[in-house]
Image 1 (spheres, rainbow, N blue to C red):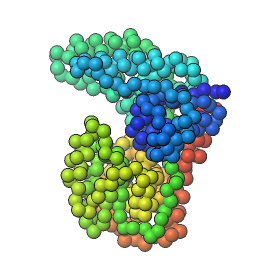
Image 2 (image 1 turned 180 degrees about the horizontal axis):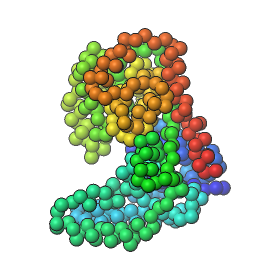
Image 3 (image 1 turned 135 degrees about the vertical axis):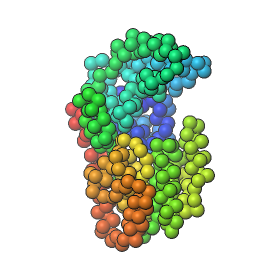
Length: 373
């Protein structure tokens, strides 16, 4: 049987990138590959609870990737580089004809088909975060110069000389693709992410606004709150699990700022699908360059999506022809109010839902099969 390796160091987040990872595993399995999944945890039950893909995980062989944890509180950047070297060594011993890196990670497997999924062009091979030394060039502290020099020498002789050379960079969004090609990565191509099409419109449609998201700064939920404050006549819902420790302070700040018409719901998407399937509007406020899967799922559920311009979610609105892009809080509030008060027939709602099919798991599988030949 043909063999494939899928690298996703921290799958325990169970967000959009993790869904894409598991759909790649499923696509490879259907193409006749046995998949080795390199990640931190291997829990089919959790994958089933979050995405309904526990059977996909069950069919994989697990290669354990230990999480980075500094041994001492000093020289953390050096420890990260050493960790990245160890991870490359571990992965290089995997028997695989095809390799997919679905989370920014450091790997080196020569003479294989390598595909690197990119959600942000700044994150190339950057696991653990900071191991690619981005940002060190700007340091103004003289005392750090010898340390920076040491870090670069370690990278040069032990890491960069075995730099991965992907067959293709798979950009999850046109903006990411543009950033990659402008940086000289001409072997980059667009990858449309998969969307769960289990969400369908329910009636009656309710005059309410929803966002399903990880509660992290990149989602800019403070903007969601500002828009809600201008529309006190409508209920707004933020749905998502509490974040892990690095973002917990942001989570608490958001909870303290919630006005009366905004409700936080601690749940997975599948646990509160009713909020998605009955709401008239899905309001995305983030800054991510990659295409957001939750916004696509909202279209499948019949919502009218809103997104800032010049972010990955805008790709979905442009490709589908459904939704609105906004440049300011005032514009978003005004256009949301118009959508809320505009009657939409059952037939028109199902026409909105049908636009999500271009991002279906079946369409995604065709993309993956074409890549691996």
